[in-house]
Length: 375
Image (cartoon, rainbow, N blue to C red; front, side, top):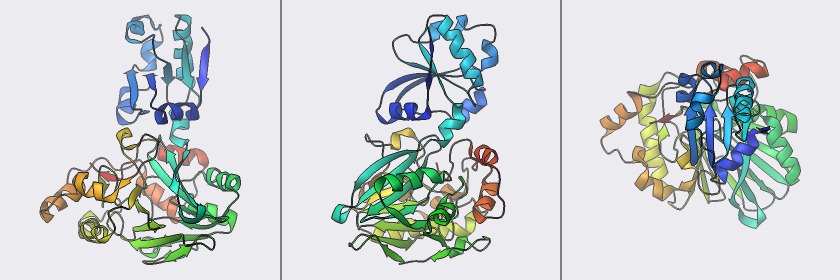
């Protein structure tokens, strides 16, 4: 049998198309437990590759023969070796090109819906990291919100759509991934917006992102309007696009709410978080579709691969929006939080412009799942 090579894009289609897949993950057990490739119909076997150096015979009974098999490791090398052993044993098998490193970086653009006057809204789904970025396009112009560091993905997509990037926003100073926002702006001549309250330590120029700031795309009525919504950070800002979509940054997710502790100020920001979720958002139209900056689990993906849900439904279903007692809420968002994101302090400094690590260093900083939510 020959060994097939799958790219991260190939695996992403399996996730989005809801296909079956068996993954043999040959990383160490702790790495697998912390972070793996998730799919609605994926099954897994985790055997560290060093346990397979003498052969794969003992694990063959645990490997199915009726669904596709993918071998995964951190950076590719170990999975090639194991895949070749499985092929020699008569199995048709593939390995993931670039390993989990490539999975962490892959981005899949998915259309969310139509905007007024022929406009469109796209969600850029970074499946391996749970990051969600956005691009609204209309009449030859585009606005980007919460872009990750892979600037070429957004610039090439805009070129394919025949639109000019005019506005680039970050909803807040990110701590779990490196923003590409200001770099896209510098490459395209777009304005880069960042909340001033999050930007006291940044060392580059930006346009202040203020409450009620509104920009229009083209000459139409499509508006991208800012809504101050602190709590995850003191400057966190949401956006209402075309009176249809609510982009919540890291304040509200589909199955959880944002954590207030990544700048070390959880106790100070709890009241802001509650006011945003239980007051500011409650005053908005319940038909708005919530589009967050992250997702935590694969079940949050819709059938078309997007992540989004009606605000009114979240008021009913999201546990973080249904804690009546303020002290219980405070305890929930300050006590027993999940581990903080990998290298989150260093990532904040990168996003402030204080340090400029190499691409390899940035990749290592971002490895692992996002942990922006209260779980």
